[in-house]
Length: 214
Ligand code: MG
Ligand code: ZN
Image 1 (tube, rainbow, N blue to C red):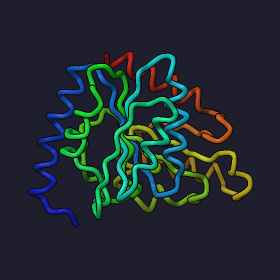
Image 2 (image 1 turned 45 degrees about the vertical axis):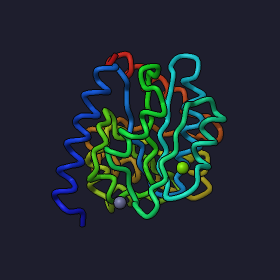
Image 3 (image 1 turned 90 degrees about the vertical axis):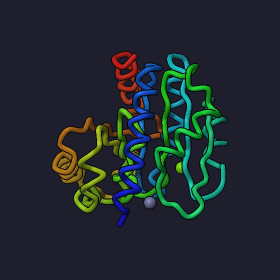
């Protein structure tokens, strides 16, 4: 369990972040998933897809290594890595500190790739406008029902690795119904970062949201 004073302090910093982002007209997304859902590959595709339209920065959280930030830089993003050591989620203060390395005034979109974990990131607001949950078809149909807090607070649910849907035999109608039940207000996207199918619709959504928040 996360203790209440820690959460209350985080919420204050998250509100400060949110005010700062709004003032800049910066669209900020907090991307959460289990480990191995293909978040970084999806974000590489997303950065490349937004490339000609929007300037995108990425803050990446992992326990160790800066491999993901390097992959995102190769895709053309300005990217900064946060290594959390033993902490299995990002907190708002970490985002505020990492921001200084990104020159946020010259960005249109900021993507925060959270640590791979569907549990405690649900409790830590980072000041984002959109909470995005990525779920791969290899994880089965039940995930949305097993992790209610992160799904109920999601603004977007992305079903990833759609190119593997047939191979793993997932029942897409069951998965869609479970997502709808767990995330009643979320926009849902189905895509494959590997083939690129569905990525354009996702990038168009980001561009539209950024236009609305600028
Ligand atoms: Mg990653
Ligand atoms: Zn945690």
